[in-house]
Image 1 (cartoon, rainbow, N blue to C red):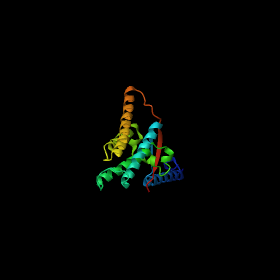
Image 2: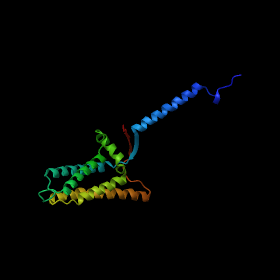
Image 3: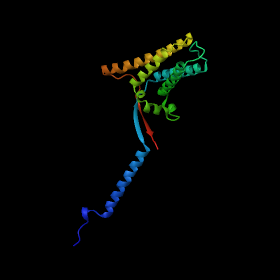
Image 4: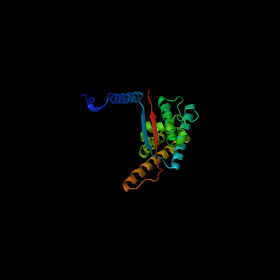
Length: 200
């Protein structure tokens, strides 16, 4: 009298289960090897008027930095720039560009290379009100104390830097005062960005 196969299952069914498990393991190994990472980040947006003003200030800082490098905007009485002056100007240009990128319309900012999405992914603090406010204040304080020797450019930097400092402090005040009072600040709703990074 013959008995049932050990384990109560047919050899063909066991083979199919084994092949499916092997296929799943190979697929997982391929994905891990390629380094596919999906990141979804919630981005808090500024009111439209704040976006426009910040983009204008960022554009002004970047343009003035370029004018300084080519010698149109005189920042110092010295005939030759020091390495410190050059580095400060480059930093100001980069910070101005970042200001534009933060508050630019999403479709425009991501048109080439998804720059805004990558900025929020790798600089996640810029996607929050608090992080953005601190960044505004930091860039504003740097611009405020550059103090070029030219009276005109000194006035321009004081205006731009002062605006960013006040805006940063105002955003922090609204953020934390609203939390203490149990209300929400009057800002636009946020959105999400998803970034997929593949490393071969």
